[in-house]
Amino acid sequence: MDLKQIHDDIKSSPEKFSPNVLFRPIFQEYILPNICYIGGPAEVAYWLQLKSVFESLNISFPIILNRNSALLLDKRLIDKLNKLDVSIEEILMPKEILKRKIN
Image 1 (spheres, rainbow, N blue to C red):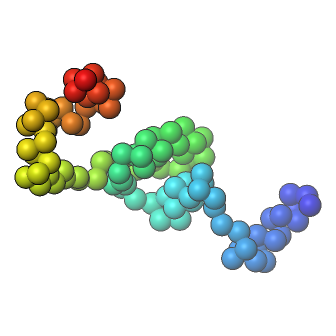
Image 2: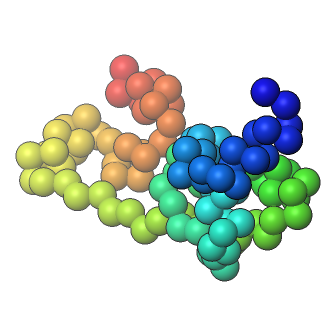
């Protein structure tokens, strides 16, 4: 299959072609540009890896923001943290640092 045939197939049957996981953000911004993308930590990291691809394709890269999040702790868990002498701020530290504190 040569490039012309691929191009013709895309024109005649676009429903058979879709962007894969790598190109979804690029395709998404190309067909429906956004000023801002709000995502979770993994999504934000993934989008930031694609910035140079956006630039090379001359597609506007949106502002990237972290989605709001919350931490809900019940009394039982707060009591366990107090028993371990671990603060709420400390449970958000990297796992290895927290392990050293507890051990």
